[in-house]
Every structure is written in C-alpha cells, then in structure tokens.
Amino acid sequence: MSLTITLPPEAEAKLKMRAAAAGEDLPSYVSKLVTHFAEPPTSLDELSGPIYRNFLASGMTEDELGEELERAKHEMRAERRARHSS
Amino acid sequence: MTLSDSTNVVFDCNVFAQALISPRGPAAACVAHAQLGRLVLFVSDYVLQEIRELPQKLKPQLGVSPELIERFIQDIAKYARVVDDVPNVYTHPHDPDDSHYVNLAVATESQLIVSRDRHLLNLMDTARPEGKEFKKLFPALTVLTPDVFANQLRAG
Image (cartoon, rainbow over all chains, first blue to last red; front, side, top):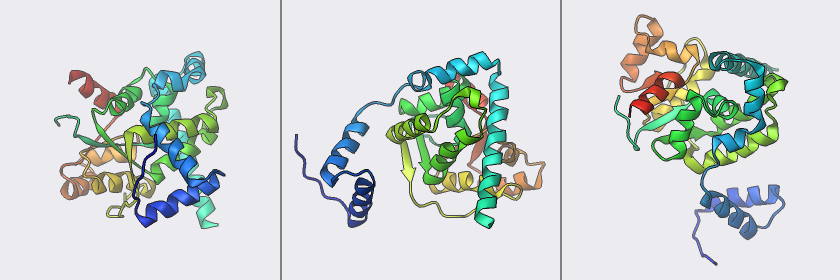
C-alpha cells in the first residue's frame, strides 16, 4: 500500500535526521515506523522473559526490588549531576 | 479519585523498570492498564532516558541488558504519548531531579503520578512544608505508589 502524507517541516527535519542516523532513506524509515506502531504493544511477560526468571531466582520480594530500583535511580542521577558539573 | 480511560497519568521511570523485571507485580498491572488504553500515559525524553540509563546501576544478576531496555522503550512509544515540551514550573525542594515528573504531570494535566520515590510521595503529606505547598499549587494532582494504584485499578 502506498500513502501520501503531509508533515510539518519540523517533523520532516527530525525524521530525516533519524533516518540518516539509522542509515536508511526517509520512505523506508517512515514505513518501518508506521509498521512498528501498527503492531499492538508486546506483553510484559514476553518482554521480560529470562529477566523475570532471574528476579524469581534472586529471592527478592517486590518491595526489595522497588528499593533496589530506587537506589539505582538515585545513583544514576548522582553520576549524571557529576558529569554535568564537571 | 475516579479512574477512566481518560485519566491522564505519569509513571516514574522505576514503575516501567519494575514492570519489566516483575511482569506479574503491581507496577506491571499499572503499565498493563496503559497498554490496554485504559489510562492516558504520558512520557518525555527525560523519562525515557532515565529508563535507558537505569540498567547500568542494577544488579547484573537480574540480566537487564541495554538492548532489551531499548526494545522496551520502543514498545512504550506504542501506548504512551511522548511530550516534547515540558515547562519548568516546579522545583522539588529536596530532590530537584524529581521535579520533572511533577512538571510533566502539570504540562499534560495529569491527575496522577505513580512512583515509589519517597520525595514524590512526601508531597502528599500536608504535615510537611513541601506537602502543604504542593497541595496549594497543584490541588488536583495525586502521587500514589504502584501498589496502591494497582489496588484501585483492581477495584475498578
């Protein structure tokens, strides 16, 4: 199927940049984008796969995982602040 | 708070991360509701970047790879609305890095931020000066943990 679409100049410029970064021409890149968005979201079970098994094997509770994620987030942010201030 | 498929929400980066690692937990229930279009979920480049950077700081045994995170982020874009312009209208007094989540919620007229971050959750405590100020500035904005929000979703 072929479509003709009208894009605002800013969107066109952004898409051209992204297509170039992906090493593709604009029509191919846009076609892949539209195809991607036409698909329903992937289930979290499918996306997680072995990660969920690793989590279960770790013996961590849901609360402990939450705490671990908060620790990781604040460590990541501290590093980001340090990078920006140096 | 009444929930509907027009309820605008913002999730902390860790809600996404927890949903990916534990797809049967409360954070996953929140994300799954957004996937089904039962909420209007907003993200920004800032939020997506936080999700992207997080695996570097997680325990390696969880096996969260940058490749999988990238796939997850591409999938989030299918069911969340990505906001480009987030004006800076609020600065969190104790953790300025949390401010963006409030600013994103304000920019999108969201009713809810879902987070486990104690600095954000403390904004609901009007016994604290920052909570009192927040209530005055944004009376319609609520911050809930994924557990509490998932229970509300289950209750319908």
